[in-house]
Image (tube, rainbow, N blue to C red):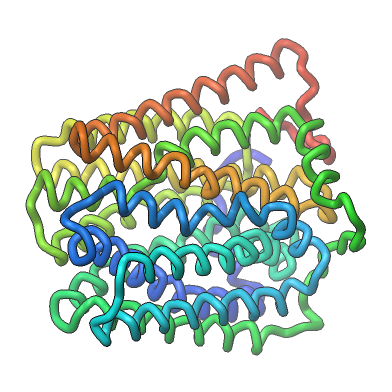
Length: 417
């Protein structure tokens, strides 16, 4: 490997991946329509600009990543991944339709959102690790980092479209229709799963169904200092830095005083950065640990820049940089952890990754929301900045330990620094 740029779309040569990617793009657009609408519903329609409540909803939606951790990773390692994806995607689509119906009927209440967010999170907790490891069945390990990056590209291309669409739909037709759009979008990914060539799937090794498989995964990660360092960095940024709904909603409404369309536009502008970060990740033919502290430091600096931005458009520019650094950081953690892990352990390791990155939201989101309510949105962004700088220090310390003689190489002998 030379580290040179490579074809950023090379995973598309695999027929199964092309089918999956097409369905996922449509579903991802619906997901961003729903996320924007849910934040707007809670922040402006069910409360009077209460950022703490938005944080509570986020916490309920991501809490199952931790609560169900003993089962989610094991399910991804033990069961047929394609069939499990069909079940989780269908469940999430149905829940979005229920929220849409409640909203359109004018009977939606905050407790409805709490319950549905928690149930959605339960389905997503099983969906996330299997969806991430299923990529290797579509393209194999050789193209895995590129496929991870293309998945992020799709997700963030949708992020450019979905929030803006959601803002227009909310302003023109009402919030309920945004949830119905999301519910219907899950049909696309279900159809794509049905059209996959089963014989062409590159089956990963399946773990045996035995008691203690979750503990086995914990022990495996505990014995890997490189994986532990990545998880600590993810915890810091995931807990206090990846609270974009709170950052954007509070800055848009309380600082820049824009309407739903202006709020949706900010989310779409940030997606320009996240999509650029995903494409940059996909253009690399080499995955290195040293990129993690660099991306974390840039994330911290860009959050600090957003906090002191004097106007809407300068804030938008900072969001682009935040998006680039956040996606490069996220994709690196995904690829590094999958490629250096025994295939039979990947589901459990990736479940831990998702649980740490998203499951810590119940801790961080209410705290960040409270800071925004009591000290102002810029101070909430300052919390995100500190999380980025702290994660960068953890990464640098891990690299220092390796250079000092710590044995932190992965099983396949590939260098980590």
